[in-house]
Length: 455
Image (cartoon, rainbow, N blue to C red; front, side):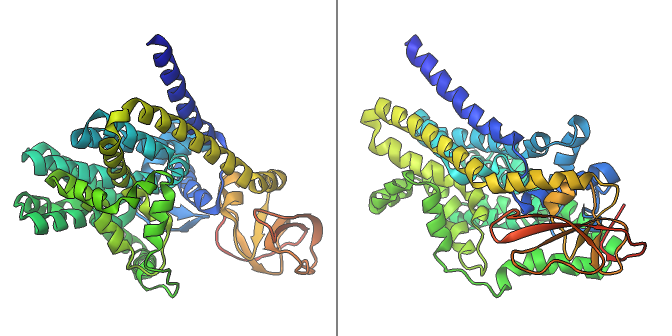
């Protein structure tokens, strides 16, 4: 017994280590750098109410994530691990809620399996250590539906309040996306005629929950005027629905199944899977928590698999319920296989991340010495990884005459270098990805035709 307990403890420490190690990696993408730089400019330059990116207002997303990450960075210092803490803590909260909900629905075996299925899902793992708002949003999405589940079950007002607070925080994290969390409640009320769903959809309560986000949007409109606010509406509200890019309707369903391989193979017994969920009202609600938002998302034009992260906890529980019910007589074997499978998937995911980003890490390492120059500029367009590691905004130049300093140009491989009185210093090739190069120039000029930002 003691040996088994020690082995389980070793597995837990290994999984914890696999989640903590990536916190210390350099930033891995321009998107991650964009979020990190918004936080950096809030902490260093006081842009708390109006998020800024490279010195310019950037208001396509509400400010809760910069506030939380900025508070941690202000207290603990600006570094990759600190900036990634909100995602890691949100992941821990999601795992806790997943365990609690699965235990209520299917007992300890289902809770154990749901926890491991979710822990080992590669996308969940990756976003648990990214400077991104997706994991924070997923926490509030899960928290709202967990509160809704408890309220529908008991009628207690405390989980109802929890649900509305989570909904409010979700609006402050990524705007209207959290409205998707209402769709399972609507569907459940329609199918079961449960009157308590009306309380979860009460217009006045939802309006009060939306007050902090609406107040921020109104402040933004007053502060920046219609132009920047119109940009938010176009990008955040309408862009995903009306963009010219149109992915297949089945894209999200396929991505969800692939994201949980091999566990999603349980769905091969589709009829038994459906019967299991339709047998009880609580399990029907669970099924609706991921199926209805999945269907609604599938009608959007451009599809981004990261949007599925909010559905992951409920899909993991559904798979765990099926496994726990079908293989209960082999519980010990199921637990052992699930542990080894989770550990193997996480080791593979970490190895894949480090190997897949090796080029990015190396090219960033070669570029960073030039970021410490007294004057640094971009030519053409900025790279937010370099902006972040510079420590603040880098002005963007559109053409000559060039001011004195270092000029950075990110371009395609094979294009001719700039020949406008600049001294060519170095070409970092490839830079960030194959086919891209970063050219470094020195300028001794005196004036600038610049646009963008600067300190």
